[in-house]
Image 1 (cartoon, rainbow, N blue to C red):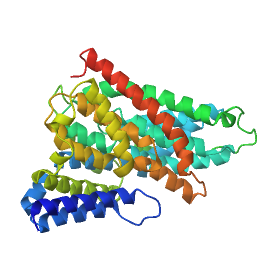
Image 2 (cartoon, one colour):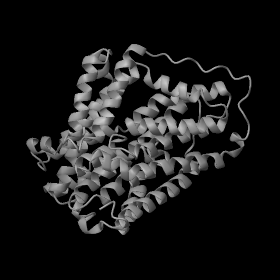
Image 3 (tube, one colour):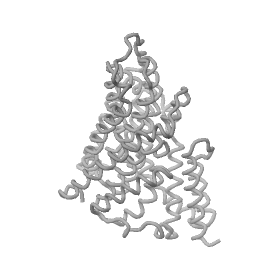
Length: 418
């Protein structure tokens, strides 16, 4: 078989596997689809084994690995239980609880990987809603969307931002400076939309008979070491461009420090690392490299498609919102990386980070965080239907992506984003 045809078939099958894994009740594994696609690229002669290994971006893998080690140690030490319960226990009214859910989830998602944050926060939030005797659905939808919105602000907030940050070389501080206003305003919009859509749920106070929130279980001695590490790595990210430090290197050093000094058993941390996600990334890197080598992507997207100006900002955001619903935001980002590399400036990179992340809020299958929350809720007997999520997803996505386009457009016109 001609290698171009083989590459086209493999690319198509891989992305079908990725897309259908996003649909309910279909037993297809996303990482295995990417891994099999990578193996087939080698077996079909599209790439040599050496070319396949070279295609893997180990800077991205290293950054994710280092942050996963820190997150794993914090999880085992009880940091997330402590953060969630302490912050939510401050809520005296349903509206205040909503604000705390959005703020706590958003901030945690900006500093750490958002998928992990919702994985750990969701059971705690369900428990609190049951103790408060309130409908958990508005809070769970707000949590999922707040995790996506908050993660927009930083390179380490979500996997697609990690890809964009590493590939583009945009300094961590610059990345955050452009997107933090988008995340903050979008969070306010999210609170307002959920408050309006479920206005009956936020007019009354909590029942006075609510049981006290269960005290969190955590290891204070471990947290005394881990929290300074978290603060230190965040500071190091922000000053990395000043001292010419590499963000993946900072993350890996952080992981090493956690293993040596975090007071959490190293084997426990290593088991908690999401090796499946890393395999998924490695496989997709190889599949995309094979498609790029055969020139397949030039038939669909090329440098002339996007211009580094306001029209490009709009186009990237619109494409991101639409395609994210088909294959989710990480595969979308990987598809666009080769094209954006050929376009000078940071305009389209930042636009892709905003559009791909905020666009994931449209439907349940738009982002991994959404599926994690919905599936965790289902295991607790709480149903969040596609239409229920869409009812909030449509206004949130349209308003937040619109705000993102306006903010980035203003930054472009004022010369702050080039």
